[in-house]
Image (cartoon, rainbow, N blue to C red; front, side, top):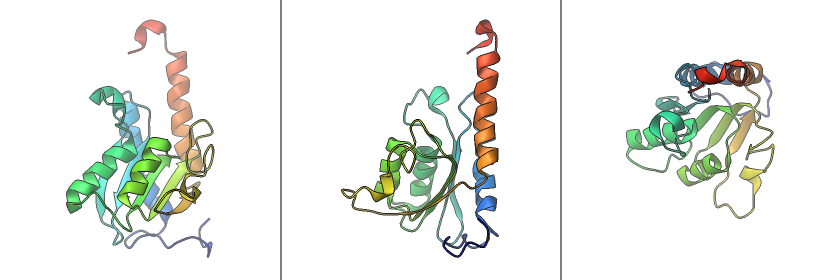
Length: 171
């Protein structure tokens, strides 16, 4: 992946997309430690400034829209005072779902960087070619598979541990 001329350059201040994904992984670990599915997201300005960072929180917030991507985009929009984030970079540990795809399009995200594919509900490549659907009025670039093993492993370990937990220990 590194040195691939087809890839966009990482944002200023970051040596590579792995460094960007490390920020999202930290948020994913925080979410997992609090009992949420361990997915994390970070939004960077085109200049490499962190505008928002969050982990999944639908359980804690009793909000089905509280995916890491949505929360990070909300923070970024508040930081710049506009719901549109042209040229922003969204890094997320798991391939986004349809809801998050829609939010990225409305926010005018310029680049999506994701780690693990989501074969069940991924709306970027796995189940739906989201960025290429002809009826959307915005396109964005995608870099996939960044720290894929670490991102996917975090999710697999989390759900394996939940399945193996005694029933009375489940929240």
